[in-house]
Image (cartoon, rainbow, N blue to C red; front, side, top):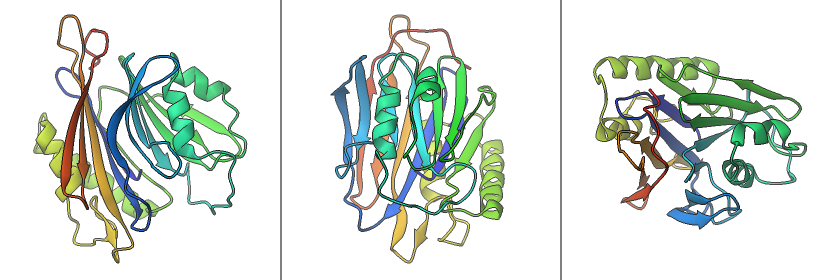
Length: 247
């Protein structure tokens, strides 16, 4: 839930998340299909709370969660609900952006939500008191880092690595994007894209979704999931209605 990239590409964008977690946290369940109130959902599940940090809806939208909003905060549990369950509820909506604006988030720990819809990209933040929203340009690449783990200077360095890497991969393939998240090494394991802080907090998985809009009747979303400690990879497909290319 700590480094997220969005990359526009022919046919549809890539949205990818590196999840950094404490080693003591139980490993997530591989991506599975779940019946929501508004349609079919696809996401890896946190077995502890039942939520997720990355979810796709059969309507065609995708949502990714990062811990924290604008700056590092002090966690003060217990919270009313886990952020992972909030993400599932927001994804299970016909209009997740409107749901974010109308949802009561009092008692929810601060978070950043990246939402990709047809032709649209949204950045939604909750700082524990106030909601914020902006619409980044969906024709440009973007990178976000969790403010709970990375200091501002490190976040800026990661942005530089990302944009330098993009210059050598125009446009990137699925394998290229996964390799960026999996193998980018700054020489400082505490702050690399694939991070490891004394084997206590580390990158445990990489989730990528590629929404292919070029099909006539359906627009399949391909989810690639790497369980790094387990050395396993998974590939799932979620069919969504065909639309015009988003980028």
